[in-house]
Length: 221
Image 1: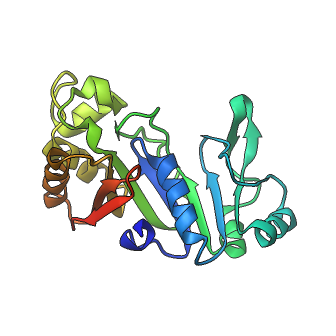
Image 2: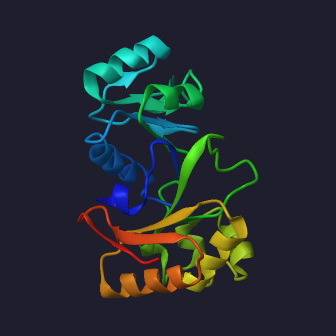
């Protein structure tokens, strides 16, 4: 189970970084529902999750929905079929549910991301912050695979037309210091796993790699 391999604790878990956060959100929800109640939400913007009941009211509305369904989504409806942050605080959500999974970042679907000063929006009571890195960004130009590409290149010490390497990605992660664990997604080949291992060798935190599509995962650090 990826939840146990990532050491996801009860309380609030924030997902940040590159593409794959939403899929990871759903995967964790399916696993964790066997261990308790789960709330899916965002501190920024997400599309309304399909397949999960949506509760947009206050505390009692959410309490009733959790009792009925076990896993729910909450937030404030916004334009374009999206949700913004919930009406109640993340502290209140943590008191209602065993697990609160928060998509706390946006990357426009790109594998890698650098952050502006106002990003990510990590809830103050988050017990886990999982930084997602897409292995499909390795070996391609910064300009093609990085959100906030100028900032990413600056932190990596390379130009935006240069190729993304695991060492460059590690420089960005270390410079930002945002996640307490890293998940490398879309590891589909032997070359991908070698790249993920090289990235892990330059990081001091817990690092996992795998494929959410295939349901195969491994601990690297």
